[in-house]
Image 1 (cartoon, rainbow, N blue to C red):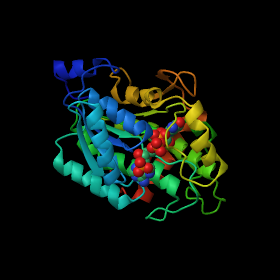
Image 2 (cartoon, helix red, strand yellow):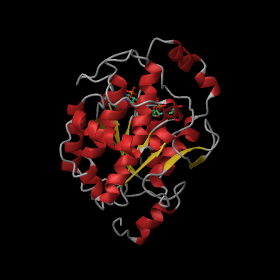
Image 3 (tube, helix red, strand yellow):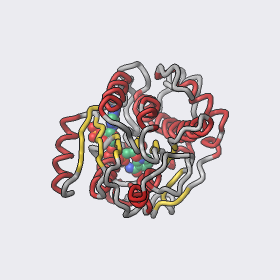
Image 4 (spheres, protein in one colour):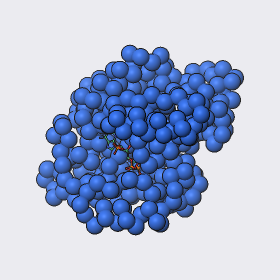
Length: 312
Ligand SMILES: NC(=O)c1ccc[n+]([C@@H]2O[C@H](COP(=O)([O-])OP(=O)(O)OC[C@H]3O[C@@H](n4cnc5c(N)ncnc54)[C@H](OP(=O)(O)O)[C@@H]3O)[C@@H](O)[C@H]2O)c1
């Protein structure tokens, strides 16, 4: 059972598309670009206080200035967070926990795709570090704070590409396999979904008020895939902007996962026509529903991020 909501707070989330979000505190990772910027814009226009978690605080401040021009009275706070550096994730979680009384929603949106082979500060393959390990450590690090929020949730951004993903528990970091940018991305997006669903199962088991949900945006024209030197990157830079849906449609599934009071933990929200269209509930791929794999990945992730006793 979640905490009891006051009638006006309950009314505030009654319609996920339009309801007033005044008083709600939301963290959005990757708020500087694409879907994260749009999610931040929509949430702040509806009155939420948005903590923009950005790997470049300088860029974050510039985007916050733009958004304040677009949204009257936007309540935005820029915070430094590099998901590819576990110390940065721990610092961010500690800072927020010290400063806030509670957190209502954590939106794990940030990600990279099809990057050239590289290692994170902690020595992990950079896609895995940015897309899965950092967000997992962040979710675990903010659970206590979320537990003090109103109808608290963690939402994770996956992708239709998770259908092609293989999670290799023996070689998550591409040390034995040859590195392929597309395989690294697909693995990370399958890991996002496995972890989100497993986190929810474990939260239910311990009677936590926090729900974990996931979303995918279809395909949207953003800066995703612009870093990198391959053919996919060239296509993402030059072709995708002309053929993919805009960010307002792409942001809708994540906004629904974050705000729709009707959705139970473990729900996956996507785009109606796979690549585009309004937000609707989706069935994850069979591999993403493999609870034994999810549990093993969860344990392996705890070990890699050094989260020894999150109580789950
Ligand atoms: N666009 C699509 O069609 C699509 C489809 C499926 C899934 N997705 C997912 O949607 C999410 C958002 O992507 P997008 O399309 O909006 O791409 P985007 O425009 O490239 O935005 C990605 C965001 O992630 C941030 N980021 C990257 N590395 C980070 C790190 N180490 N620490 C913190 N933040 C970091 C970026 O910061 P900077 O501004 O500093 O670069 C940027 O704000 C990703 O998880 C992606 O996998 C997108």
